[in-house]
Length: 199
Image (spheres, helix red, strand yellow):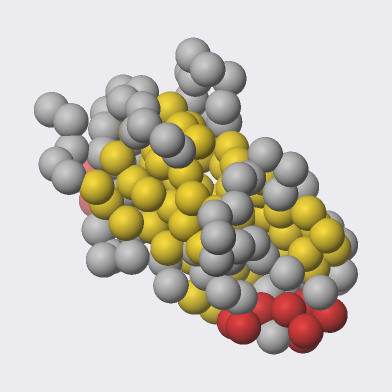
């Protein structure tokens, strides 16, 4: 009787361990690897080249669904995501970043700041992003804006209050054919930390 009880207990323990390991690995693949297997990186920005395509694998599709992305085909929309700055340090909402570069080669584009739960920040000025319509270009034709808890004078400010992870998403609508063919040719916007992070 004790031997049978021990076998049942061992079976239950191993079954529970396998279940936890299976669910844990699936969660990690979907939440922590949103760029999937066919990913590219340009500067701080990553993209999954299969997002929105009919040959996307199950993890890519699951990641898109869980992370609430509306993935269209590459000729319609391309998505690049940044979770680190140009130095490779994780983005934090309490830090101030300057995001700048040449407007991407697309009919329309936007860069949006999200909290690490992929929801928008509570922005008192209602600025959640910068886009091809709101961007003010300098004499070189480049755009620039800042994120952080405090406004930087003279630049478009996207508030990111609190102390949590920060995710930036670059969306390109109807990108030029050359960019569709070679996503790694993107002139990636730079993400540079300014000063010390707020305590």
